[in-house]
Length: 158
Image (cartoon, rainbow, N blue to C red; front, side, top):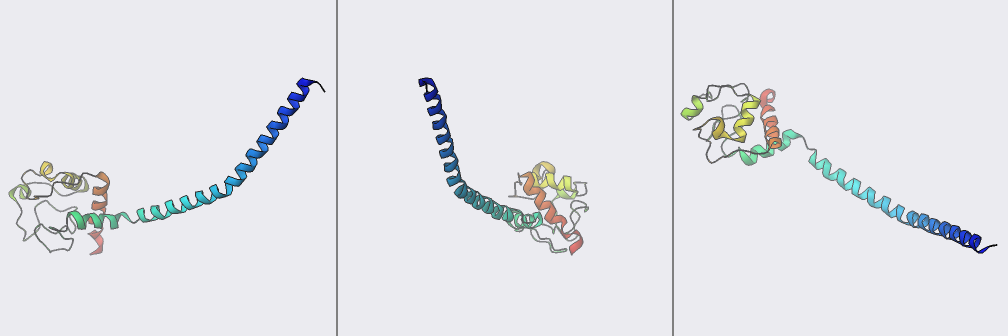
């Protein structure tokens, strides 16, 4: 055997040994890696399950933290603010037995989702001179959508 043939044969054998060692190393790491991957996937499924609560429930939580101090969703139950039961389709400033600001009485529109969304985002911009102080608005588009879903959930339920 010539020297160059020996070098080639030795190189090929070394390459095969390295490849086999890599394959064994992969096998040794594959099982724990698969286990770790399963744990990560199951944990993400658990956290996503908690995130997937119905949007109406999340909207209720937003209502309770941002609106409930002054408003209720029970028909006829006016507090510091008017009740919000069936607000979509209602003329602004038109709940009986509630003392609206002159700005809200004169707003001249019917509440729809688009107007409510704008009002919840920035009440002073939608109805300048309203009495919604100290509420300054809800910036998150997603949060407003969930809040509106919650408010719409009372249209047929009560």
